[in-house]
Amino acid sequence: MIVLCRPEESRNIGAVCRAMANNDISTLRIVGRREDFDDERVRILAIHSFPIWDNAQFFDSITQATADCTTVAGTTRRRGKKRGKLLLPEEYAQRASDVTDAGGKVALVFGNERTGLTDPEMDECTDGITIPSSENFASLNLSHAVQILCYHMFREKNKRSPGNTPVTLSRLDQTVTKIGDNLKRIGFFSVTGRPEMEKFWRDILSRSALSEGEAQYLEKIFDKAAGLAGKGSRD
Image (cartoon, rainbow, N blue to C red; front, side):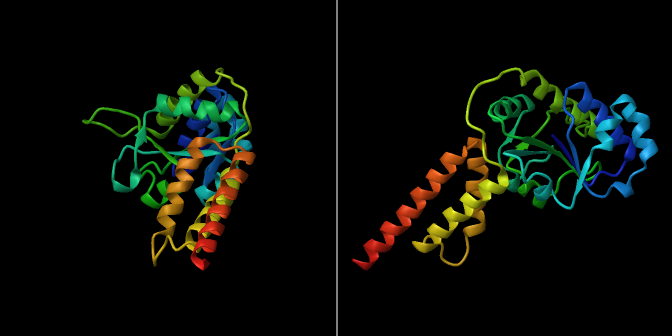
């Protein structure tokens, strides 16, 4: 699916719909309100892909828009301390294919046309993608960026493989909280550090595409480790 975060230009949304339709992607979610966009301008550029716009869903945040997804990739051309390792489109498409082959959902997130995704918005994603472009003119039009990412996803979509259905991010957050609770029980955190540690676990486990059984097993491991640690301290 495609997630547009705070888009400004209605015509860009229409062009995004067309890029999605070109590559058999039909789910559009927008962080924003439908009434803030000009329906006619969207339809002019969407042409025959306007049903994607008609069926678009609207949310208040990236986290809400992607709660049922297994992995969420934010697109950015800026590198920085908080942006981690950025993947190329073809690299992420290969990773995402494993998730979709197993029945999970993948979200590609694109930021505002002028400002892109902020650091807090990137933190709501589990991965980062960058599209190489000329240093003399690095900024891509929103719909062009969507077209490039959708094309790579389209090229990978026929690589099917059997497997367990990966858990959603909202379910994964339960596992991450369980890990954090158990690490706290054994005194792993002093005063700070838990949010950063939980983000680490969320990012790395989302890339693993855990099944429900694997998530439960991981929770049991940390439960047992914390229990043994507590027993050892009493002894």
